[in-house]
Length: 413
Image (cartoon, rainbow, N blue to C red; front, side, top):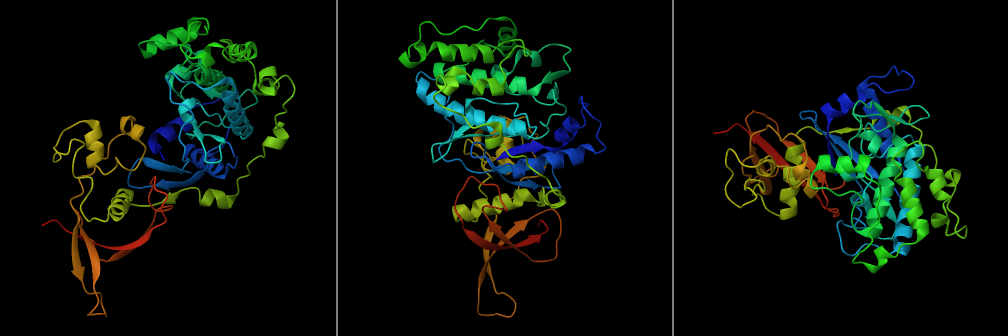
């Protein structure tokens, strides 16, 4: 799952980009791009299942399909991929990126961590974002429209005063840095600080490891070195293009292997009015649903978010991670969500949930479990919620449990 700030998305969508003027508002552009992402259908692109919006908060929750095997390679590593294995991985990645570019989408953050291995053995491109749609034939992107991971950013995106750059060429650079990492176990430009990395990307020549501890990484073919060098050309005008990569001797194994053509690999996504009307599922108080879902999975009515990461009772201050835990968010997204720049929830801590027994109306002998949540507002009605793991609550679980919980909201004592 990926969590995005609606405020930041609208700001990005409102940036001036080169190309024809559009009469749509920034919000319409955001929703249209989400609609496109939801309709993407390619074996080498992770599927966006649903987009959840809590109208009371700033966050959009993008729920993607679960790819069981995880990332292809975690870097840095002393055991990179063999050249043959890297060829198979890169072939899938190339077809996935070609499909995205065909839909006028720039990925903007290609790296090994965003290449996921499916159960079938195919590789899927993950971590798609919003507001990365380009305009015009030159794929012009604004400097503020995408960031990316420092070690995989193209040099033209780092130049001071640079307002536009070619998004396709920037993705090709990131693919080159990714391919280098797959066969060498680390990124091509290394420094002790982010500014140092940027300086090396802009100014240092590409060097291949001469004395590598891995035999596979130290004996890559000249064809592979040539391809990586052309992908990491600092001049975006001279950098190899994606169609040229597909025809490169290393990719075709000197003409013995044919990659699918663009016409065979891509089909343009069409967005209808119905797609636009159902682009986002609005769920008020999504944090409460996450809490209930977590309690159901733990088979306990104790609030699972009342302790900090150290196991102590929550305090008023604490680290950002502890504040996320107390706000009921820490278990609703992957681990690196903890270190994201998302603003922590300003809501008060949800208290413990107590279990009680009541007799439903019209059935004096029957009993049912009631979860009573104390909140700061008075709501005088009884609400029954059916929670499904694949729709209502973002969760990494693959179970199909369905349960009904009756919630009574009462004022604090």
